Length: 393
Image (cartoon, rainbow, N blue to C red):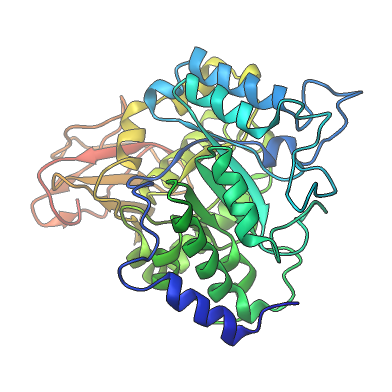
């Protein structure tokens, strides 16, 4: 029987007293890693497509590639399983992985990741079923979360399909957060409920920051530039309500990084997404085939200067500023510098001005002591770090 809204709120209040709100010590800077969904979806046909189906081998392959190509060494550490991993039926009341596609189980994969200096993420759903039609946790919350913890996972993404009473979402996710605390394992908690409430009701992002390490709040990213642009514009339009909720341990999540996929087929497009996501202090979770990346794609994803902006310990979400030459994004950094990211259109750099300490060769930023000049120009997708200015430029 579904718990009532009042009951869920009561449980959440107990689990989330001021002394026991989500306190797992993780995501002090935005999580970085790889996630299967956008690229591999729910491909379960391991007979005809063994290299690309959702299976233990896919995640082992990606882990090996993350180590071999240097992704782990610059901060990408989570390898995240998404939907379609479980068997369709529970065994003795517990979720189990598909025995054909995951014959050695999730604990085996967790050990595999940990032995390589990586972490394992898992997916489930707040409803009776996942979006792909596999078992969700509703009605089995305690046993499922304890099972996941016993497998030694490091991250849990909890989707919101087939959860029938949407007014219950915040309290329900609060209850789950408390149950994760009770496992005493530091499991990063990624919540999806704000995305299901978007446009229908007020969303309290301060509350989300108390119970989640990250939260999806907009449409799933799709493999086309229009989807990426729509997300960037949404963040700019709603920055006054979103930016204050971001900080160490809790960040707004605009969804996956598509560098290596069709949507970002040019270096300019790829740099744009990574730059803006870094300015936003957003999770950097690649969804691509790491086995088939070009040199320039790897170079962009491994750009330690841009990653440093993303991982700045202040974890301030940058904001968009409209200039006469277009738009730019500004992010305060812990040392008093400001990171600047160019918006969506390419511009030619000009003017030496007081340009300095730039992270990308050829990027020029014109600043003065008064702040931002109207001719601040960056090539598309580049990030510059301007030193010695606490505000503006």
